Length: 219
Image 1 (tube, rainbow, N blue to C red):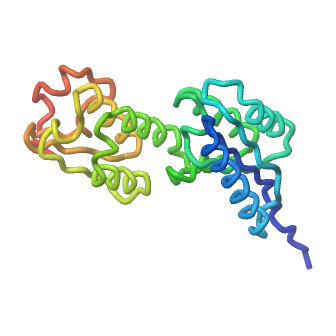
Image 2: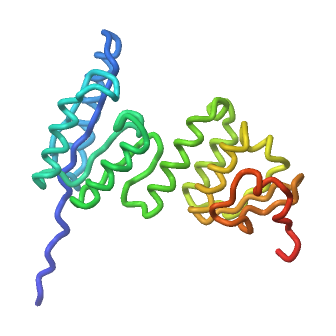
């Protein structure tokens, strides 16, 4: 009888970061304790370390660099992070680091966004979130955020919107949203413009997008 080798338990680490201040320091200690307890409590994980920095995302972050070194030394398989904003200074930096970690076989889980870098659509999802985060009104539109969560969960294939003005604050943001959603296989119909984004060429410019050329006839 052939003996089946059990799947290796991932060596799991957590990364935390705060800007500074006494109150923030207390939060940091709380996060470190929480992650320590969670990792040790999970029988499927092996503790690989808790890494915590104080400072903004543009600081040197010695603990973050130490964590990356351990990843390159093949000592970490999984990293838990509260959010994308705690992990990198911007989305381009985040994607660059994630791609390196992927090549090393390291997975990162962003808990607030409920995204794992194992997701094949991770690049599109994070780009999409970056666009929404940049929108001034995004945080004031809970239903809009709920829709985006459902898009990430692959529970939506088509979005109906009354008009472009109801979807984004300007045409540039609108075009970026459309491109990111299309990467996830999601189309948007703007009813007032009689426009279906699935029929718009991938690199269509802003003026061409909104000139009424992409009608729903024949859809």
